[in-house]
Image (tube, rainbow, N blue to C red; front, side):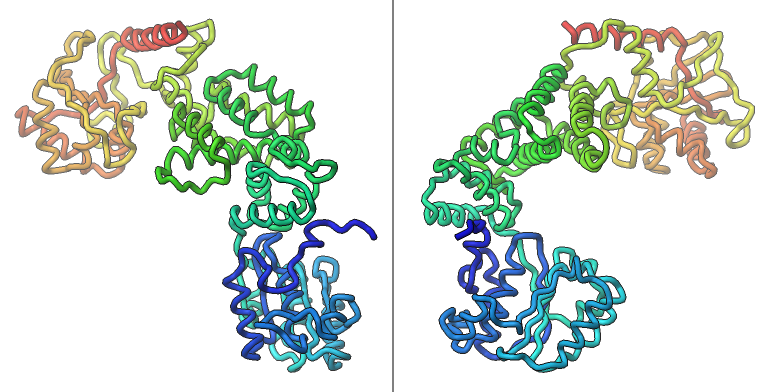
Length: 558
């Protein structure tokens, strides 16, 4: 006798054997017991969750001569004939290959004839979403009012592709992903029946790979059982071309430490071991998803499918990660997934690892955020030898538009004024200490002049705190973005030194309300009406900032 795949050999023949879909099987059994059958059913859900299996059981049960608690008895003449394939009244149609209007018209013509032997003629249309629009139209009227002896069972994994007119004519059942614990129990039962042994860790790994599908789990078990009477984690990893948890922990460690060389060598080792790069990307994404769950879910029961030892390893590695880092890595991995469909998969995986381990190579927002996080945590291991080039690079990336510098210790006057004689504020860098909206971070306002030398003729406004305090009453929004700012007087100009990018946006806007409120508050405190302008530090101060940043990088390198 030819070998039969495990998922076919152990396919349930009664509703009671269907795993993880009790909310559906109980309803179907009760309908059969009460004799209240619908003329059309719609079974929807992810692959391998029991849609076709339940459709076949339902087709047998409605024609069973002596059903038992809603289940087909399996002993009567009709049940035996169905099992042996001798009944032509139960028709299975693959909509993927029979999706045109002519196929549906042929089906519609057949419906006119009563069943030859069974009580009901049952049509099981699998992957029904593959039907063409004209085929759906041809099916519509028949589906709405079929003969009393006809039952339709439609099955699909993509219910959103079905027309609303079809959905409204069916009794819908949504099949859920099967719980990993239920899949593990089924795997153990099948293994015991087949005479081989599966460890708990191997069963959990197979359950994780199946993504809630029993058919996928049994297919993976079938693959692992070929030539192996003892199935453990290593057997599953090799049979399914997986990287394995040990490699994933190592790769995540190299990404955390920024060790590009070791990460690339590890990928080369996995590639030479025939590990599929698409699966590796999926496993790495799932690994970081587990780290995210471990980092955020504090309850003992976590939505992770793994053994106790694996959970302990995840918890240990999660301690070294910041949640922002995990989210950034997940974002990069998710962006790589669609790129794997085209081009060189190995090259795509290597580029992704370089992006994760060496963010300084890239200038996108995610890479810059990871570099800032690394600097905040002091985890930068190496920097380029040319420190001056590093300072220049940071200056270019962080400052979107360089602020105008003070020339000859004089504030620059822009003839294109924003309002009356005011000077439009130049593009200002956004300080990470401030938020981009109203919720600004509290910071102690400056009450004394900064230590840096101010240009001749420029006076620090010691009463600036009082001006900001008045603005909190008259215009809280502008007061909020002015927290931590300072002001100087140069002739008839009140020069404002604010590092909050929102300040520039508000004051340069078409609405003069904010400018008027600042001038009014300044008049009340200083007794004089000033024109507004930006305060630009001398050129040498900017050089000192970059030099300090370069020195900081040198210290980190040590």
